[in-house]
Amino acid sequence: MAALAPSTSRRTAERGKPEAARPARSTFLRARLASALAVAPLGVWTVVHLWNNLSAFQGPDAWQTAVTAYPHPLAQALTAVLVLLPLALHVAWGLGRLATSRPNNRGYGFYANLKYLLQRLSAVGVLFFLGAHLWLALLKPRLTEGHVELFADIAQEMHFHTPTLVTYVLGTLGVSYHLANGAQTFCMGWGVVSSRAGLRRLEGATLIFFAILVAMSWGAVYALWAAGAATL
Image (cartoon, rainbow, N blue to C red):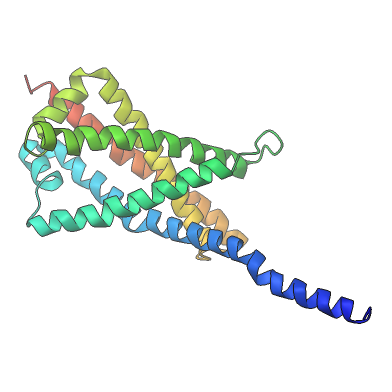
């Protein structure tokens, strides 16, 4: 009977391996899904949304058409599903990551660790910013005033209400960093880039992408701020 013990022990261990691997596999798949949702459709929609807001340089009518007009009610519903649902899933996953992972910058002061810390901090800031933005730009005008967001209203808020201006300047900065760094993580996690040379080029592309996003964001904020002076 003693000779059977090692064999039985091995079989028991082998049966236990798949069970032990399931949580890790599930976590891996959730991370990949969250990364994919962050890039498409959320990342793509964010870039398009920033581009549309730059139409504020062309005046109220151009901005209203680009940002708030939909060719068909179904288009608006489809946009809500493609954006708000992935956003809710990404937020839920991100909150779980914040609760279960901690930066280790004190022990390891590497550049990658600093980026990880900034990614977590930007996630918290972006969460609060999105709440304020969705209320001001989407929910408040529709629920309390019965119409879509008006160019004159947001421009006036941006020009004469300093907390709104500061919120948008810092909030869009956080969005820009979070998206650029998230796109880099996506490329590495999905194996799009793996070589050392490729990773160095990816780092440079990430910085350029971040700079472009900041320029687009602050350009739109400036256009709305400048137009606010003419709303009175």
